[in-house]
Length: 112
Length: 113
Image (cartoon, rainbow over all chains, first blue to last red; front, side):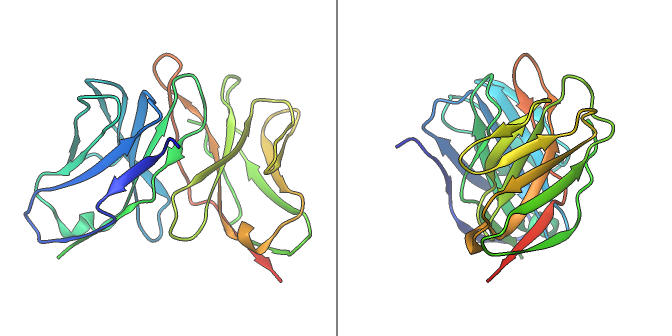
């Protein structure tokens, strides 16, 4: 069955380190999204992509970057992790022209 | 983007209908209403969406008022597994036919035995 996966599911890192969170979908969806979720907030959009080589900033993009070299993957990189980036990160994808976004299981990131 | 307003929390008895309201008074004519839910520690799950007609699928029904300024998500026979945060979202239209969504804080629905 087609699916969307995230790895790792849990990550502990230190302030200043570079961290990459992986997102992989097998639906061949053009659209992919990264969100973060913190207590007291809903999901906030970090970056999104509408296809290969396309990336766009969301509402909380500072300190994060993404690249889209193929349809299946949208890795999220924290160039220099900060404690404020401790959060749960969700990846999602959707098919062009369709409304439903399918979400991954999430990655819990702790920055010490 | 049209802003949505939802109650912070609601309770419902198991087996009864759960009616979750959402206000979106600034919605524009080409914006859809989406509903998602998020069960604790899981990723959000799409439920249903609509433009101006009432919609029904295997999970829920969506009732949109004639002026489109509010809507209600109906879970006809709530179960304990329906306990979740429910998000009402008005779609922001992206480039072409692609769209991104803005999630608010949602309504925590607690289904009680």
